[in-house]
Length: 158
Image 1 (spheres, rainbow, N blue to C red):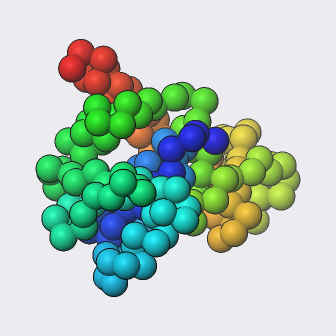
Image 2 (tube, helix red, strand yellow):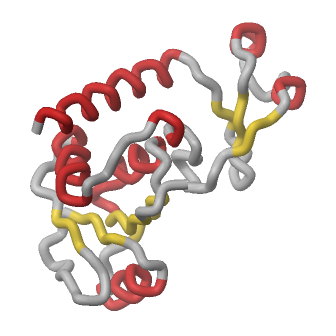
């Protein structure tokens, strides 16, 4: 897995999901009480990512205040400020809901869990060991890859 770990506040939940899809450890947290947020960031060595200006930086952990509500701009800001990279080999290695690393599963184990067309057309499946959600590379995967490729390209020209 990638080395950076994030504590993303609730108003940035969509960003947390995309960080997970990029292979980053990104957990959601409430901003209140702030003392709990700060303790968690410190003890788990996480970068706090938020739009909440009441969350203040500390010498004990890093805080990134996002400037935008737009996902593209938020990802660009993190890539620039934290020097994050989007690595193809890390994409889709975490559950976008649970933040747990997904594991490969044998195709025969998912036959009753996926639509028949998916079972017939896909060869590779992964599952979340926590929520048991099944993942495969379908059209949503292709769209996500195109979007992430565009972000990488824009970041390389910035």
